[in-house]
Length: 374
Image (cartoon, rainbow, N blue to C red; front, side, top):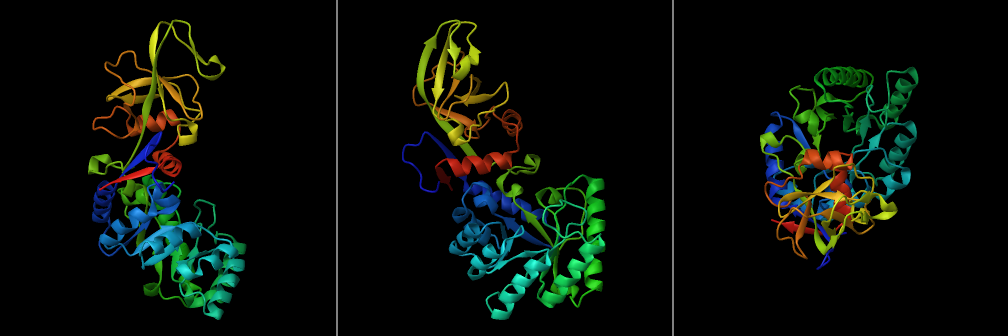
């Protein structure tokens, strides 16, 4: 959603000032002479591309990473005129649809190389593609040139595109020090093989690998550019000053007293062991409060943790507020973020929803109205 409901059941508050501060901190970690690619895929991790692009531009970032054509269009519409890289393989239809937005595409197969070559010959493709190598890594969409077939495909790509290739990329699957060193060494050997078997000039090609986790690791890698998303949204390294950038909140819509033995929610999944005061809260799995929530799930009311009871409904959850004084209809309930000192920490919210904060941000931001705080 992009148009805020004036009276939403649940909502996200996006802290643009924190995104700006996180970006400044991240740029300060980039070694001298290296570039920074701000990753805005998944609508800027659920925060809204249109609102995040101006922050990226203000701080002089000249490269943005996306995955979909809609994201590419949104970045250009927001006024960004720098390098725009699609951080995954694309279909021929996607490639053609993104030509006007000057997207730099990944290429890892002769078939896509032929597609790009045709657009170059027609004059429609103005950007330089990036050769994507697997380098023993994610085994996702990168070309694995450790095999004979992979090297043959790579030579076919180089023969078709030649010096039109503007980048060579990979994605490291692990950022543990030993794994990172191994991945970096293997990637550099394969990059050297590409240069040895082509007319590409090293100073004309951006060789890049590494993510937010790579940037904050203690291991220096050989990369011309870091591609970072999570760090912009405060998901990593709070001890360095990075702060979460999205709050998810809802409201108390009903308060009722129920006697001992009362069942709660679908399938009578929970029962009261004594008389309790229960609050119905205006959020459910439609809004990203996942139905298969883990045990000991809590939300915060009046800055105090309260347990969620029973199964999650589509548009409602139930919490026990017996021990919290003064709870009233309309009170704000924090699912994550909100008031300072909130007891629902990142560690807790990831544990109770069984996933990482990047996943939650994306889900919440795309399912709920977003309000922006500057």
